[in-house]
Amino acid sequence: MKFPKYLSFQSKFKTIAMVVLSTLLLVACDEKPIDPPQEEPNDNVELTFKFNSFLSAPFISTAGDTITVSKLKFLMSGFILEKTTGEFITIADAYGFLSLTEKIDSFTIKNVPKGDYKSIRFFVGIDSIVNHANPQQWPLNHPMNPSVNDMHWGWSGGYIFNVVEGYYKNKGFDKAYSFHVALDKNKRRYSFVTNYTLIKNGKFTFNVDAQKYFSNTINYSLKTDGDFSHSGDPDPVMDKFMQNIGGVLEFTSFK
Image (tube, rainbow, N blue to C red):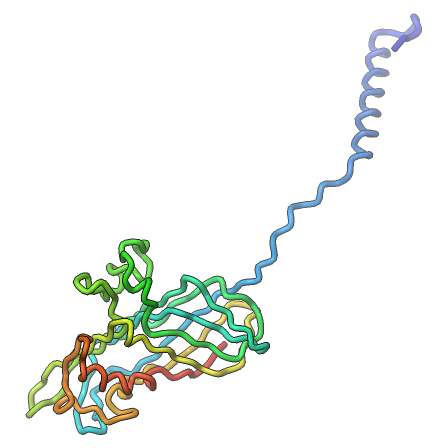
């Protein structure tokens, strides 16, 4: 850039600065604005399962036994949601642990697709592959970790699915009973038909009616049918006890 001789140094400097500034402004005007990064839409929600139980007082079964419950625990898996279209959505790697007499009465599963549904089903128990896999694979706070649930039989290579323990009156004295539901054959599915829509996190609420273990399909007597079974094979006591297990969980609400 050539300047006339009569221009001072300051004038030359101002002229150069103005040219540079004008050039920068032109370049800036030609640049397209950069859009802020867009967040990916979240099509999944969380689903909480809450279980209410009424275990504070003794009850009398239809067989005439006066019964109290001191321990009631569950392992749950295999959550399947049925859409109104008839499509079944399986929630992978979802598990729940309950210990109702210790006030552990709820759990949450994640990555549940949004949508309109008409039923929910799950198992009390776990599938055979997971049941006989190494229990140390689970993180320390995972519901399947034995240090969390205390429901793994190391000697048998499997989990207990349902623990029911307590006392009953026998000839005026308290006598202990204990049922540990285990083995692949004793996994049980619960299905509940209800319409619900998932557009945000939701919650299912259930009642746990422990009296149904003894007064449901059959009248189970702790005195005559047996007060102890840890799921042998064969095991006629557990086979009879299992006849009542289907009515223990009752759906109450979704919100």
